Image 1: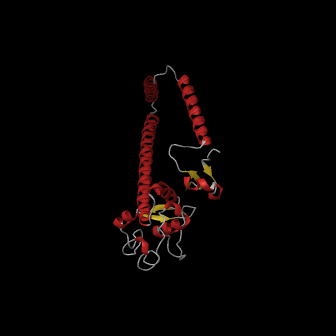
Image 2: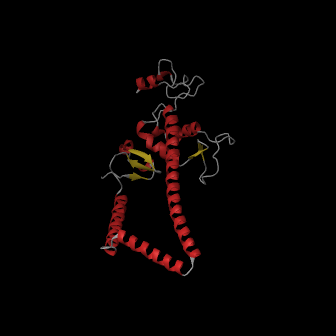
Image 3: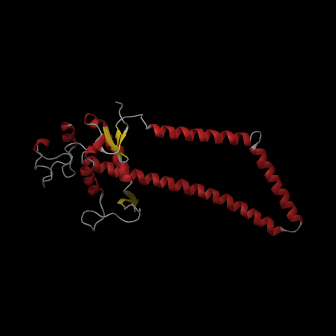
Amino acid sequence: MAMKYRYATREEIPADQAGLYTEREGAWMLDTDGVVELNRLEEVRSQNAALLKERNEWHERFAGIDPEEVRRMTEEKRKLEEAAQLKAGEVDKVIEARVRTVKGEMDRQLAKVTGERDALNQRLASLQIDQAVVGEATKRGLRSTATPDIMTRARSVFRLVNGMPTALEADGLTTRLGKDGMSPLSLAEWIEAQVTEAPHLFEANAGAGTGANGGASGASGLGVTGRNPFRKETWNLTEQMRLL
C-alpha cells in the first residue's frame, strides 16, 4: 500500500509508520525533503499556466510599441498643452498641473520607501522572535530538526511589541495571559507548554526533573551530578553532548 503524505490526526497513522511522520501546519506530514502534495503541485502548475497566458496576452497587445517613444510623445503633448494654456493666459492651470505631477511622483516614491521600510521592520521583528524562541526552546531540549516547526508555531502567537516578543490572542491585539491569569504569557512559559503539547519537538528527557535542584528528582541518570542539563537553571552544553 502506498504511503500517504498527510494524515489529519496521529491516530490515523499506521502503527508501523508512526515514526515517519511529524506534526506540521495542524496535520501529520511525512517527514521528508523535496516532496509536496499532488494538489499543491497542480495548483502551482495552474498558476504558472495562467501567468504565462497573461504574459503572452500583454506581449501581443504591446508588440511593436517603444515605451521610450511613448514617454517622449507624452512629454511633448504636455508641453504643447502648457504652451497653449500660457498663450491663453491660463498660468494658474499650468502651475496647478505641474504641482500635481510633482506631488504624484513624490507620493509614489514615498509609498515605495514606506513599503520597503515596513517590510524590513517586519523581517527584523520575525528574526528577533525566531532567535528568542529557538534560544529558549533549545534550553528545553529542542530537536535540531524541529526548529522550523517551533518558529512557525511561535509566529502565530508572538509579535514584537516595544522590542519584546509578546503573546497575543487571535485578534492580534489582546495580550495573552499566563497560567496565573494576570501576568502576560512569557516566552519561557509558552515553551514549557509546547514540551507538553508537542513533545515530538523535544528530546525525550526534555521534561524530566521538576525538583528545586533543577532535575535531581527522578533524573539521576541524566548526568554525574543528577541535574538535567537541558533545563534553564542547570543548562550544561557539555553534559548535553555527552548524553547525546
